[in-house]
Image (cartoon, rainbow, N blue to C red; front, side):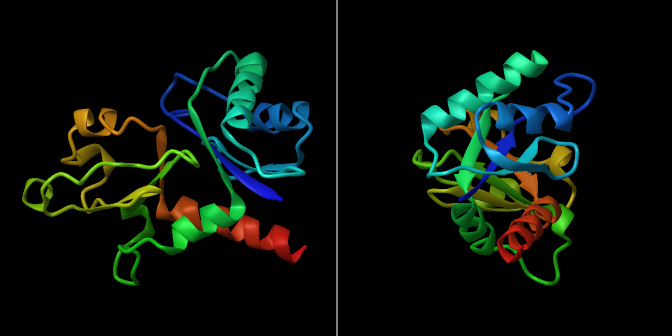
Length: 180
């Protein structure tokens, strides 16, 4: 059974450097199989014998910390859940560049229970909040987002965001593993 682990805030700037070989090694240390990374930004796909939960996510976080000294929050999802959340993106259409779309994935089993800030406060950005993810269209880029940092802190559930170009690369890797 494939899973996706998304580490938060690694390899951004000079802090939190996590070599992808160490990330794959941390998965192997826990007995997971076929670890593969996507890009150099904390995206890990691996196989486990059974569905993973919050304790397994904590164990992976500890294994990464042990190998690298970096303590990064992470979200672990079953591959089917990752695919479903990605496919459900209501802002994904042919007219929007994948790099301007963002999906903030919530930790499995911990729903997002918040409402998006008023659309008038965000324009021209768009935001859709569901129980499993926060979808955004960021035409001026993530650094120019009008969503207040305090809103993100108020969620009460770990989330980590990826642009849709990265999401599509992870989807492609999952598909190749399923076909292989």
